[in-house]
Length: 239
Image 1 (tube, rainbow, N blue to C red):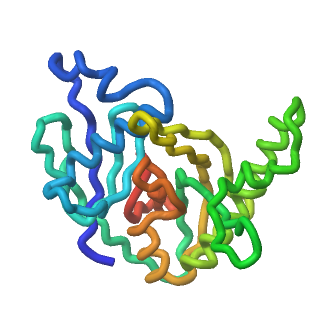
Image 2 (image 1 turned 90 degrees about the horizontal axis):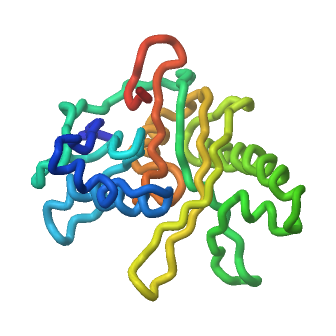
């Protein structure tokens, strides 16, 4: 992993843009995720054929943290950009890191024998047998913690880290991103993870940090924020 940049960007708050605030940063998780997707893309879409080579996370409405292979460029004058910082943490096996991750955890379930598995939200998949009613809300909270931790454990096995057993899992939400008329909306579940992990294989872990974890990365999921479990900071870090 090399050549990555960490950037904080904010929509300008001066009078011309303030008048467009509701269009640029609409209320509601789905519409705002769609608008934020386009806003962040505007910083990197230098050519029509460009593929996404960045991850992003909304820190607050109109404020984003971005990890990218290129420095962002603001051709439309929409943003205030802090100077990008090179992202090149030096990690060794056994390092302990605090982390925060907003992710879309899924599990693959084949529709029938021999078919390729279809992706399902891990929480809703766990609730398939739970009938609607007053007990479903509590079951959903329990499923979010249980299935979220299991998903994170699988991520660690694939990507060279182990999260502590007491990792906090919260903030479950179903995001509905509207699309053009006649097209089905994009629907995905989001979980927030906070805790401490141990790096086992630094190269695999750093490669996964650059790619992102889980799905819905185009809509602000997958960027893991890390810092040393001791006061010294290492790389991507929450404010």
